Image (cartoon, rainbow, N blue to C red; front, side, top):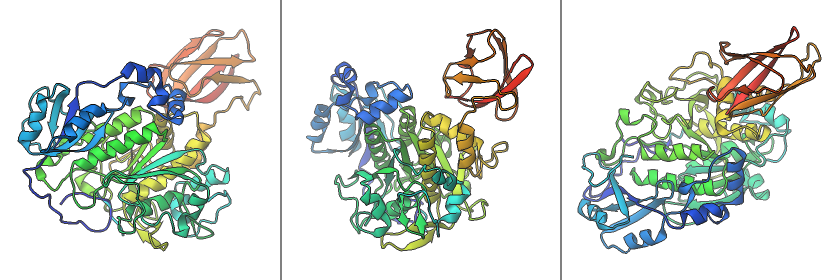
Length: 534
């Protein structure tokens, strides 16, 4: 049965007429690439540019839009429908007969075609490139019904320090957000104008609030942004949000992958910090489109490729691991670059439905877990109810990550993920059920704040920049003394030993991204400091 939105029932809608094929059509070039890159404000928002500059992320040709003249040419054809576009892949998603799609190779600007149907042989220079399961501006919160899911990951400790998501922008890619514009559970969000934009990529319209649309996005948003005084508090009540619909609840089709990528591209251009997605793909209405277990290798599925680029662009992509148990994670949760979230019950025990990782994925999946069995949400009628699914554990944690990133804005998305993994309950013994376990965001925050003095001796020693990518420099009151440095990983293993003379830097470019402890000895004194490599 096709995996769909992580909610309620499996709807047995079959794709009509398998003679109609889906395919990705790749273009050979883009127009005015050099001009666009020389004037990035013509293709990206200022916030997006600043985010990339902050983390040293290059603005490249993938940020340049698809040539609209090419799209117009294809749209003029009677036997092919253009359904989505992607600037990252310089491609469009089309639907039509196999013959009509193959005929597109006759256009000089078409370089490659990849069919979603795995049984169809590709020609020319071809390069391979749902699951829902239902069951405010103050830091002095009474969490009420949400206390357990908030306190399990210790995001309440961040709230107490006035880190409630302010200044962090989250894009939610989901199925529908009925009544978010009217019910009181989101009044705090509306009062502070924290809904920055909306769009339905499926219907190609701006109405995401229609009461007839699937309510899953409303449930997801409530775990982050919902607020009912003394009764309900989301994990990031003061973050800003874009609400995007990319999931078609009437059919399970690879087009949804393309719409997800298109929405992610828009999120990137708008300067979004975090993407939360409770969507996953493996099986489709047409079984020829299905991904095999081996395809879930972190690089094969189209949506996973898109998620990898989003992460490369500096966005923290948080996604549900899925509700398929031993059948495994779906795409894009298989990506090493994506933060995939499993589910536990209110006591922190493995939730029976939570998708399990495997050796097929390039890294431990899920990454971490949060409460997904008995999660408390606000539904479209403004009622508080309890539902099940990793589609809830993911946004619960995504909101917590928004607060943590507000507290530690100098971190890159990869450094933030590593900091959270290192704070989790089974970091030293991860498995395919809970990944690294349940995060403690208070611990992550404390570990992210670096000491600049030796509390034992009073000798001052600071290092900069921190976080760093390549080199670390040291300032010390103990001039004229060599520094003897040992670098330990989070498991306590010494992985690097160096002796530095005055004004000499420590080269950490060979280290993997993550958190390290530096033991710095000089004049028979020893200082221990934390270093973040990103």
